[in-house]
Length: 156
Image (cartoon, rainbow, N blue to C red; front, top):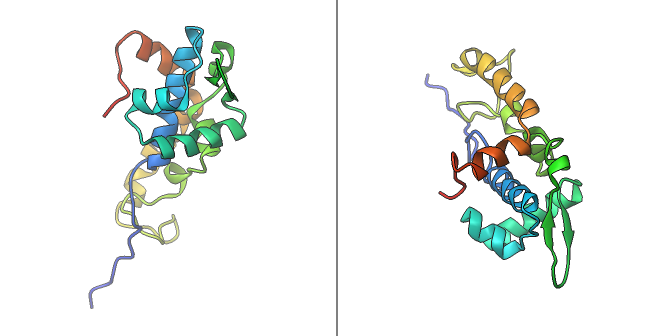
């Protein structure tokens, strides 16, 4: 008898929401470092992200206190350098409700845990622990440094 695998619809390392949040936060922090307040359309263009989806992500980040926003002329989004040193990638993930690195099965199965593992579960425990460490100890400031120095990019 062949057992059926129950797959999740999307088994990626990070959700699209989280990917957009990382990129948008980096753009805002980089602009803030230069005294700019990018608008929604600026951020969407600089990250090659859909405007409507970027708006939702930015709203989550503002609600979580990671970014600030101002309406009207001279308005836009802000993440001052001093704050960018305190915002970890984990905080961004939490703000957009993504816990996939901690909870998702690497094979995309619904039922996967130490007591009921998928065939790859034990092989990836260490990798997931290291990923959690990276998320907890990498700050937006670090991403901005690499981005501003031209060592990285944010468009697909």
